[in-house]
Length: 149
Image (cartoon, rainbow, N blue to C red):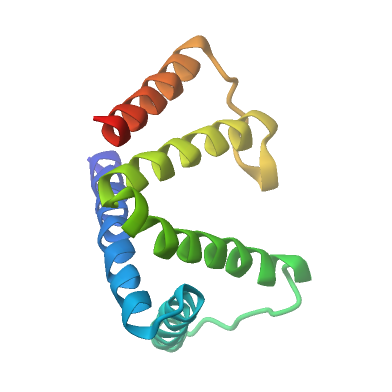
C-alpha cells in the first residue's frame, strides 16, 4: 500500500514541475529576464523550505549537524536546480509544456539509469537491463512524437 502512495506522490511532484514551468515562464515575460524569474522562484522556494524545516525541527526536536555532509553537497543541489529552473523558463515558451516535460522526464530517466548503474552517492546499484533500455528508448520516441506531431 505504501508503494502505491509513494508512487502517487511521485506523480504529484511531476505535476508540480509541469505547472511550475509555465508559471515561471510567465514571470520571466513579466520581468523581461529568464534568470530573474528563476532566481525569484528559488528565493520563494527557499523561504518556504526554510519555514517548513524550522517547524519540523522544532516539532521533532531535531538538531542539524552542519558538519556532516561534504561542502560540495550544499551547493550542488542548488546549482543543478538553478540550471533546471532557468532551462524550463527559457524552453517552455519555445517547446510548450508537454514537449518540455516529455524531454525532462526522458533526461531524468536516462540520468537515473546511470545513477543506478554506478550506485552514485549510495544509491542501490541496478543493472541497465534490456527492458530498461527499451523503456528509455520508448520514452524518447514518445517525447519526439509529442514535439513533432
